[in-house]
Length: 160
Image (tube, rainbow, N blue to C red; front, side, top):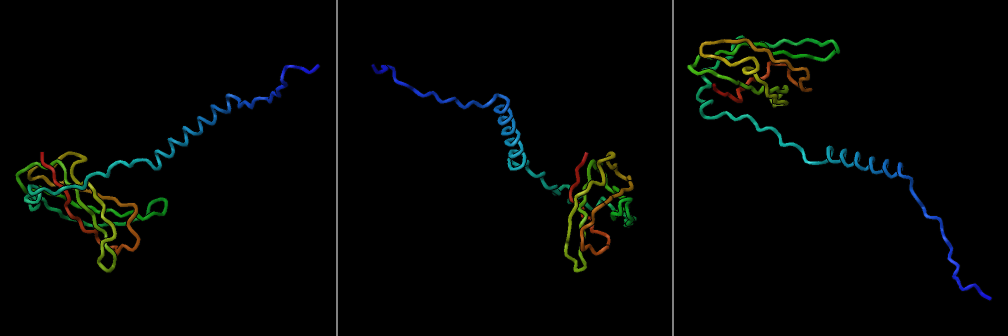
């Protein structure tokens, strides 16, 4: 007599251990975060300083004097260039911020690098009739720089 029951072969079910699944999910999450931070949206670049008409009209009231440059080697044999000088306010308005572009040139007079730096504002504003020293330090002057004093161009003035 034949067996009425159909014989079914039972294959062992493949199971993945829970710690392996959790580990794979963790790796995927970390990889996703890394990819987002690396290739995701970039923050908007800060707005370039604007020299308003009001600031342009006041340019003649700000004076740069005793500007000189000195260079030295840092303790790690890196070149350090410092620009020292004074800024004066001969106008009748208090200034809370002055930023300048330092423009480095090559031997052919072509601009190699522009670096925006603040000369008034970090340590308070500049009142009418006041003169204050400033120091600008550059630890990475551009290759090919002609070693001359960079041009200092006022890029932004903000008033109190």
